[in-house]
Image (cartoon, rainbow, N blue to C red; front, side, top):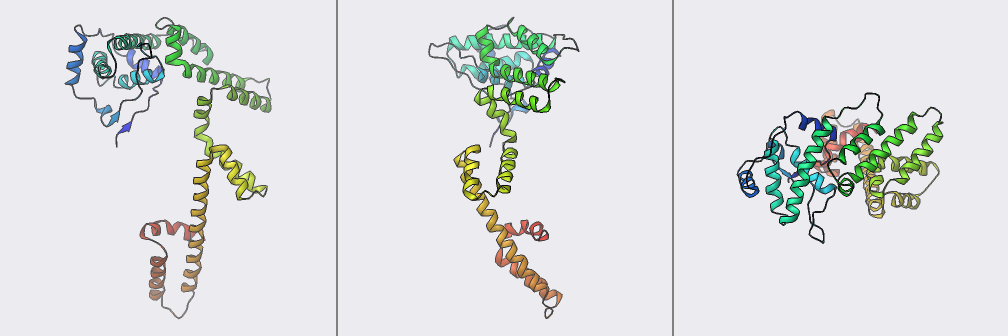
Length: 308
């Protein structure tokens, strides 16, 4: 199965990579000829076995749709900088877009890509005082963007990232404020999180969702909650489908635990039988294990039996 390359490169890291090379003029000539030459070139090693990230499309009026999916596609190609020159990257992108866009949005996309590369190079050359905090650095980067893009293009390419960066800057400022108590910091951060757009809030919560759920389950059990209450808790936090899967997993684990307990008890009885020699005991235990567990299950068994 082909793997998918993660889209979000560090902005500063990519910019530094671009700045490490001298500015290369795009090759002169007809774009169709340039794309044809790119078609004959082998893909760089880092892209082999991957699917292009991002997407590109025209809107209802036939103009290029400028959004973060388009930026992801730009970054997918720019991730090969070092393996390919900037002109080679541009030619490969052009070839890719020619199969997806009519002439008008195609020209808009390539123009936007040229400005995106120039923006990245400008960002890499930007000097910011070491004492500047995150909010100051973000404000400087946003000012640079407006030198290369319209306000609508900035919103399309960087909207979600700007909102999350603003959240991060405010969160750090709250944590660093010595005048606030721990409880007040927690309250203000919780308020900030509620103000995030739903999709950004979900992305932020996803990595720790299972930890929050496990803590909530433990609290419920301490309070004497039963299976119905546990199911309702899970459904409210992760959805009904996930709650159903977790309930099924609970049943499977309980059944497995019972089988291990039964095996452990019968194994102990065999080993305690003084009428059997050591060899006979080993044979009886092996036969019991083969009767109760498949070969795959037997691979899991030693760790569970040792804990009983």
